[in-house]
Length: 410
Image (cartoon, rainbow, N blue to C red; front, side, top):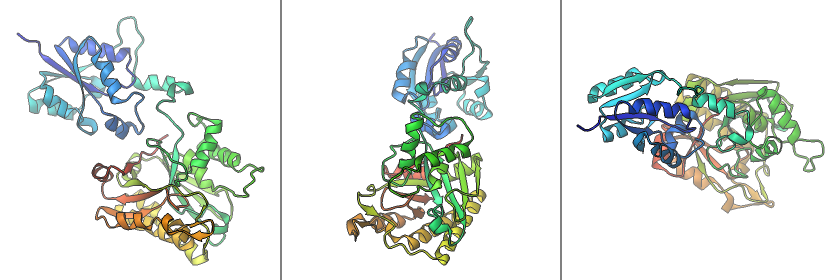
């Protein structure tokens, strides 16, 4: 009589003795088959890339003598293993007790699969291990986490330019930013604060230090804008704050380079709301000699419009109001470009350059029915077009150029 088929599922990124002991215990029930979370699923729920890509994790798991065979799960989310389950057709599904759920039990009942929960226990004579505790320990060693952590970047959502005193002198207001994980290639001159990010990497090459985020942002701002800087330009504080302060943040400017107050939230549902409705479209980087400030036209009415759009944007995000968010997001972009038309149509070495215009990108993507609003990050002039869409995941699946964002939680 053939052995029963036993199925388990997990990511198995930092493979450790706890995983092996779990495999040993599960294999007592029969031939063991393992479903492995894909890189995409890992990124979606951990909000960062795994240390080891899925092909390497598959190789390691399949090499364990207690494992009969292993697969990369083709599904999505917390039940990404269902397609693998239907391929293997196991007799028994084994889970760690802490990873058990009514949903897993229901899926097994529907398929006539025996459901078994095992308590997490270390192998005799060994220390108890878990992926979270192992990563916490590795976090104390920068070199150990270099492969899967990096300096975040920032994406501004509304109020761009208000952090410059020559703008806020007309009317005070908020700038709104999110700190995003570097899960994609962060290109230079593309509006994602790469100059500030490079400054940070001179001090902390691998990851941000664990300290008060606002104090960290102040240190970065002062380091970047040192008194010996020769270009007579002060980088806006929204860059350092947007990178260093986790989650969603807003900062209030009133005629000064540093804001008078900073607020932020890492509410999970709010951050997921943004992740579910924002995508980035790569464009050409801002060209050498490009100016987005030439031809600027700033007045009180335009800055008031910028400040109001930021207020509306913040409130809509906290309400998880997609329609309101899209309207405020676009209003912020319109207010910015009313003051700085070079954001869309920049000049090169003093002359308007039609080839450098990003208007064709705006025309192309704004015409799509699933696109609700659009804006460029930073000073514009190229880089990325950031879209508010009905469903970011569906949009990215249909258009390979689209990049989903993942907001830094801590």
